[in-house]
Structure formats: C-alpha cells, structure tokens
Image (cartoon, rainbow, N blue to C red; front, top):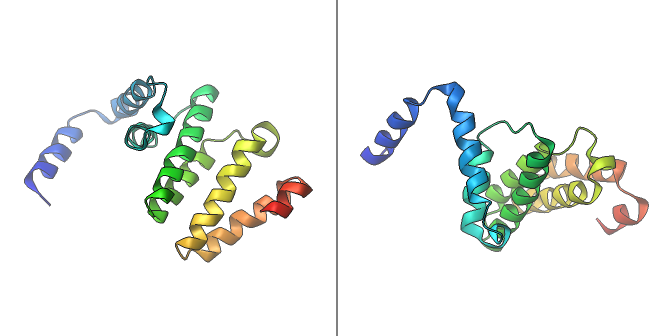
Length: 147
C-alpha cells in the first residue's frame, strides 16, 4: 500500500462510523445535482460509489441511485469492465422496491438483463442463471422472449 492510501484510510477511520453513512449520502447527493450526471461516466461512478457505501432509506433516493447504478454499469460495459459493471447492476437491484417487478418493472427488468449479460461476459454463469431465472419468472411473456 502506498503511504497516501494509508493516510487516506487513517483519516477516514477518524470519522465516527455512525456519521459515515450521512457523509457518503451527502457527497453522492451533491454529485447528482448536475443534470447530466447519468451521461458523464466519471461523475456518475463517483456519485454511485459514494451512495453504494451507505444505506439509502428514502424510496425516491433508492430509485434515483438504482437508475444511476444502471447508467454507471453501462459506462463500465463500454470500457469492457464487466466485473465492475456487474457490481453496479447488483447494487442497483439491491436498491429496488421490495416488490420491484410490480412497482419498478422497466428499471428492474433492465437491471436484471444487464446483470445477466455482464455475468456471462465475465464468466459468472451461475450468477447469470439465477438472474435469468428471475426474469423468466417475473417478466411479461413478450419481455421474457426478448431476453
């Protein structure tokens, strides 16, 4: 490890654990104030990296950052970073409503589909199979045929 990494980690450890979530949430929300955040790969990744380190409880925030995780994952695919893309898609899935197939169908389907694609591309066949099974069990007939 480099000395600046150790310094950064030591400084981070000085922040009380109960304040870290709020700090990450605040940074992530500040970064998404830019209207073009989803189109800017670096800004989008910075925002979701911050919020993926905390617990989001507000449904509006969860939906926003689920969509931004989708966008960040797509940027990673463009850079052939499939493992990182899968991480973003899985983080997005974890932010979905408790009943995502009925409450956030389109977003849910796209996150699941993208997770399947990058899982196969990254050699994670079992993970891809689980997500594909979920699509087949929950997607409309037409959407399931297109997957």
